[in-house]
Image (cartoon, rainbow, N blue to C red):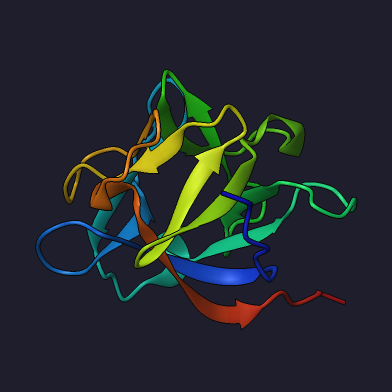
Length: 149
């Protein structure tokens, strides 16, 4: 399917998994590749559950990078087919595209793997895309990008 353009801004990523509402969440502890990214129930603190989506570069049709909305240096990286958040140079951040699927969007890495939320609390895996609801996400627009002066 063709990629869906996403309006740059701050979002919450709702995972389609069985049980209470779950959001893409940065954990508080770091391991070898950074802090694991999981799904967890809604947290009143936006620091770990609001993400900025913006084009990786200025060319039309560019893939997107994703970073914590309240920590602009902490971007999503993929390692060992899992998703982490880490303060590494922007050039090392993973790049993503979004495809429409029934009920939401599928988020694909630059290597064509889909983000999959196995269950609440599990680390997000990157897998070969299949028509599974655990690979479907709803993007909740929170706010446009702001520029600090």
